[in-house]
Image (cartoon, rainbow, N blue to C red; front, top):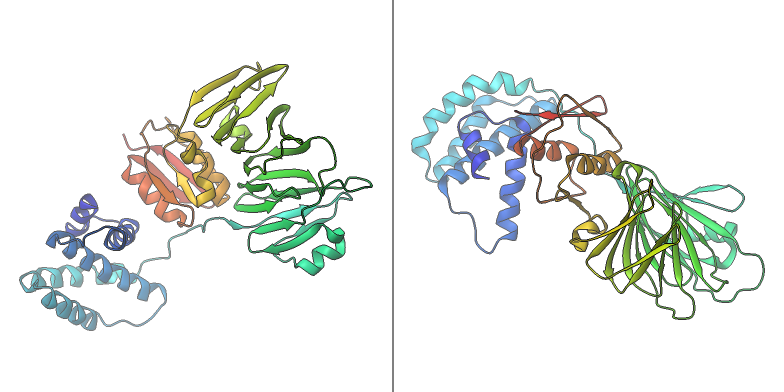
Length: 376
């Protein structure tokens, strides 16, 4: 915040940095226990708001009088006790007004949203963003209990007679969705993921198949284990909270446990993990490696967060590519900057790019491609 304030006051801040400063300032004012009292930070906020107001008016092609804008600025500055600063700022505005009025809209990409398709046994696909309960029941019978913004709910059924029917829920890049399965188990699908499951769990095991990344909160049932099949690997539980990640661009198949216990198996090798551990399966050798992780960070995507604490630039960029449905291109040497922190998944891409640039990573977005390089 202080660094951006200095850039704004010196006139070196980009428009992206100016907008980011305003959002960060407002966030701290709203979230912290005390208000920001530093006069330099307040001056920078005033600069930022005036500049963004001029940009907004230019973008909307409104005729804005520079004299009127500076007059408003003068009133605001006097109210804040900044009269001694007015003349200097007036000259600054006068010299930059034409450039600010000519600003072209920045290309931006909005984040992902609740979006999924449901595929039936016969191959029919249903766009859930347009589906209603009546529409689904007419095609699936009594299995569906409800559908709303971002969630599909099945009727709880047990020991149903007759043929077993399967549904497959699929999220695209830039989409996510939640489903409550027939046994009461909750599942969250990340972008570019799928979950195949029966409309009623009639066998001795509750078996589902996943691709991409899915987080489960499994309803406990000691007599009917819950088994997740992920590219040949199996995760077996009775009732627990865990995440399964099979993204090809992230490398190994990973199972991260938050609560309970699970057995991870592949090629006749089985290992048990406890909360706070992650089992990684090498898809070439079948070897299972276990390590301690911050499980809450691993599943932070279910809380609407992009996690920067991956320790791997490529892994974070893979998140961005899936969530914003963009292509990431690396120019030259891949940056080795260490990323830390969290970004809301509702953040527009331009704000994320500002954070990357502030972290020492050169990031530029052009024609649907995020170009990444090193600032060194």
